[in-house]
Length: 150
View 1 (tube, helix red, strand yellow):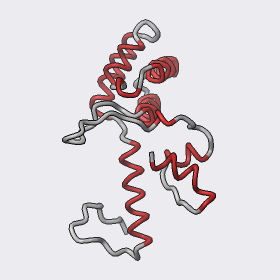
View 2 (tube, helix red, strand yellow):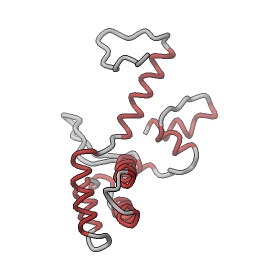
View 3 (cartoon, helix red, strand yellow):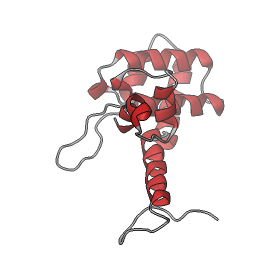
């Protein structure tokens, strides 16, 4: 939700970073459910997949030639049609059955199982890097932010 809020408040001084922030700022994304997910309240393990991650995984699968553009469109429509707590790659593929080539769906399911893009994580790491930069490069004790490449 940080990217969405940063896009809403950047004119008031809030600084946003990452692809999700840019997509909200540019109006390519507008809905809150793009970043929403269900997680276990005790372990914080995600139980669903945010739509922004599904979009990024679809784009990667398309770029790698795993699925056709028609299948990507059908899978995205299927994902959008699911209530956010129900969005998992398995549920998305199931919801797209009959609307895309079954072989494309099977290839996407296998691709997502091995190569799913976690855009929210990637953007969160960029935000942590930006915070470190603002702090003058000082890393807090116990930091798990990967060191920057020279």
